[in-house]
Amino acid sequence: MANMRMDAMSIRDSGNEYLVEMSTLQNGNYDVSYMVPLKVGTPPQTVYVQVDTGSSDLWLASPSCQTSACKSSGHTYDPSSSSSAQTTSADFSISYLQGQVSGDVVKDTVRIGPASINAQALAAASNVTNEPLGDEFNGVLGLALPDNSLIASKDGGDAVTKGLFGADGAPGNKFIGMLLGRPGSDRYPSLLGLGTHPSSEQLRLPDGKDVESSLSYLGLSSDESGELLFKVQLAGIDAHPSTVQGPDAGTNQNNLTADTALLGAPLRAVFDSGVPLILTTSTIANAVYGAVGVGPGSDGVYYLPCATPLNLTFTLAESGSNDSPRIAVPLHPSDMVIDGGGGGRGAASRRTDLRLASRRTDVGLAAWWSLGLAATKGDNMSTRHLSGVNFVARMSARDPSQDTTPRGVSRGNTTLRRAEAEGWGLELAV
Image 1 (spheres, helix red, strand yellow):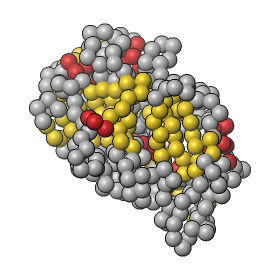
Image 2 (spheres, one colour):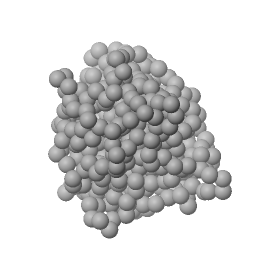
Image 3 (cartoon, helix red, strand yellow):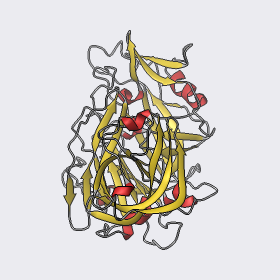
Image 4 (cartoon, one colour):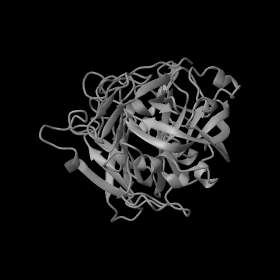
């Protein structure tokens, strides 16, 4: 399906604090990518990359790539045309849930907004499959934690999230952030923040409430090999009765009479901006959709009637212990379905474990539209393991009761059980 540019790009520069407005590319009615422009090499070559918090490496399609995906790319990065490019002996290969990329690792100057990173390691991709490249999608900018970098693991160079804060014009405050606007709605902008948060006006905070005072923190969950991804504990999933008001109140119901806990044991949840859906195991999907009487069809798809609101709250925590700090995040019902092709049904999910670990959930963009994201970097930049890794939630970056734009399925006047005057936003500190 054709890519479609939806937002303008601009840069707001306040000293060494930058807000870069992201553009969105939409494929179908639910698959959307958030893009930023980079200038790479000398002289600068402009490319557009998807911002991906589920990986840690930068790759760009190169002229040597002859696969069908690359032939659709309007921009490529040619290291042979850059006087600042340096070859390395490292190679690169990554496989996504869908898609695979490989190529040689080079080092070159990379500019993100006004910040310029010298000798940044990146992959000049010579093979790209199952990636919807186009005029404004030429590669991926991985912004997960540096220790997750495949290039660094082969001594090819540091991840962008490590090199950025030693760059010329580096942000004075060591954090990066994302605020993701909902497709089809202009209520919130889509912003990449380098050393600064969006303003209280952009976040639609109540009058007199500043951003910093609206922050709270959760610690990230570590793997055996260290902190690799933006991962927290998913301590609970609760389903709530419908709260539809008006003449359809008798028909638009989900048949729940009380709040229902759906998660038997805590899971680890990874926040991944490169995935459009919430990815989890079939056991969890059965519990979520089974709460409103929906099971998988013969094709493995859960078909949710359009008149059945699925009102969920995710509870995030530092750990599975009962005394851990917790943050409750309501999800908008219209983000839990995609267009099922008519007949009054929405395709809520496909039953598949998608190669996920049995105790892991990938929180994709479907949840982020009820959230926002930012990541901050610790002050100790000389060590490989970064200090001060925190998960942060910010109130009022989203007001789910106001984000009523249907995503493929009309929800009428359905409202969230847990929607209040203030919604929730999300930040991740690196």
